[in-house]
Length: 343
Length: 270
Image (cartoon, rainbow over all chains, first blue to last red; front, side, top):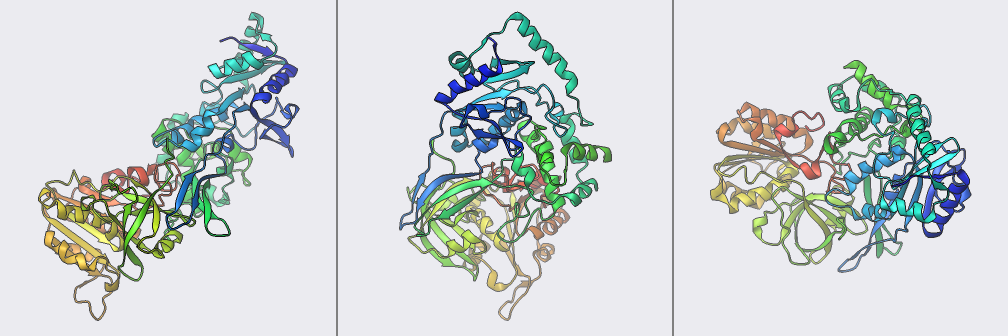
């Protein structure tokens, strides 16, 4: 499939065209940060943004999702709510965001299939904006192997100088470029410009972990009882911000809400977080992870071992959101290295 | 394709008060089909407007399309379940999880140890053993309760005795109690088993496991012949919501019944 080159203005025109037929979600500036939002105006999009506060899970696994409607009658009536998901183009997600999707897929497309997730995912087109330099000091994508968008994208956009290269990754992406694309096919000079930019990019990213990501399960298991966890937990407020902004934290709770007439209501699922004190509590009163250190260790082991053991992929994409938004700046790089140093 | 989280309706046919805290509910799916469960599996029970919670099935699949749940009124949903009467409906998802080793235990002796409400899931297997008695060897049942008035399925104890040895104990006796007094482990010295032929299974409150396991080891029962039925908050029942994890295991999928050797290295298990 061929490579299309657009100038920034042409990129906006491309999005203008796409927006006529799709809902477009893209990074916009808000209160000094960047967030993914459904676009009102194409000009709101910040092409050269760093990284969004929230991950893209918000759109595939919404914070609140009603899925059953019921009537409390002599024989209760239960109905699945199926909200229409508009055809959506998610523009500008980073390669780490793309890599996080494959972890959501493992959980929600695996047996039994989660139709709520699948329904949304099927109606999404993913346009990834490549990273040519680290977003800030918190990311560690190079360690996690998530710097590159290798598969799963529909279009990969790479910026070199003032040119935006649009590379299709699927038929869907190709036809989107075909239909709405501006600019022109990349010349061979431009292609070599792109190649060179990728070569030069290598020096912008460096590894921060003292071990390979695939060694994490072994390191973490060996360091399970390390007093180091206590040191980290002393700082931790157990607030769950890390769960909230993590692209691969998908644990959820299920609750009912009833109308004031007490006759009808809905069942919804909502995000839950393993850092919150009640997460592993059962009705009898037993809490299987009552202390911060137990919850904190569980979270890091889930990312660095349990999901890797189960699905063959590290449960962390190195986006750095957890640290960026942690009030006390607990940093996975420091945690993993800290455990490594003590074993 | 249907949504995996949509419950089926089940009608309550009978409600029986077992103790001050526990009631026994007999149900049948509205479509008349059997639940098709294995002893030791659980279901997610809905009281619409209140919520959903995991409850173990306490009857054997050999007993026809009806199934039973012994419910302790302890949380939001279980308290709401206790308000229900025959003719009322609940939602049911499942059965879920891996139950007791009914196949592996064939031809073997069985040592079953239940503490408190642990008798509820274990009863599904005990009933199964009654109905398939000739498939199994010697059966020994140990059952510990806190007080005589908390003993579940009192009127079935004689039936349990009819398939093997059945020893009861209470932590604290009362004026009517003439049986053994002491925690469940104090029954173990009385019990004679052939450790190499025995499969030992235990279900009880979290605090019980490490003590009863020690007794099993003392009896010489090999680790890979011991099973534990573990409780966690199985919220979704299908390995997605994350609540029931014991280290890397999902209790709702890989459990709730585990071979001891599967969990012995997991610090969060026992």
